Image (cartoon, rainbow, N blue to C red; front, side, top):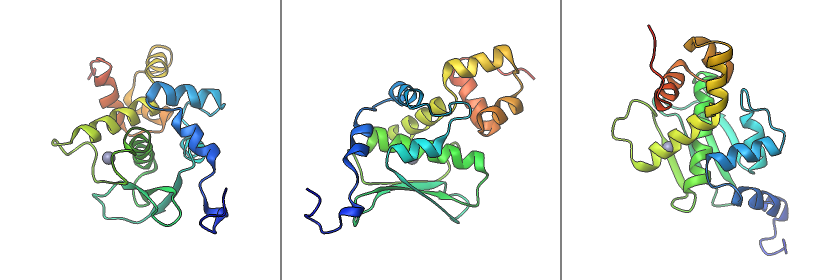
Length: 182
Ligand SMILES: [Zn+2]
């Protein structure tokens, strides 16, 4: 029943909770997106965020802050906040990273605050997991390899195809064991 808290409109729909509970890793996420007909190249992150029932907001934050994920104590929604001053491709990585925290770590904490993803050499296990998840969702292995094989292996081309930064492409290529050519 939705009457208990007297604010039924704000209650998180049970459909949304159901969708999220089916996804526990990158493969689930990709299969889920494909089954919903969500655009994969570049991944339509807004649609993912919507279907998962997450609330997305953009606001100006300090330059070294990428964004955050937290559970709103009042209405129970999980909210992603993204630095509106960053480049859209960087924002996409932030959103995917926060979606990763939601999928992988929401049982462990109700608040995740993220600064720069790639520069901090002392990232903890959760941050590494969220980065890998984000990278694999934005640049799925098979699609990434197929693009390089069939279309272009130029970092700028790959970055603009998947709407990610050149740095994210370089890291993804490295994770797939691809060497960079000069
Ligand atoms: Zn994080």
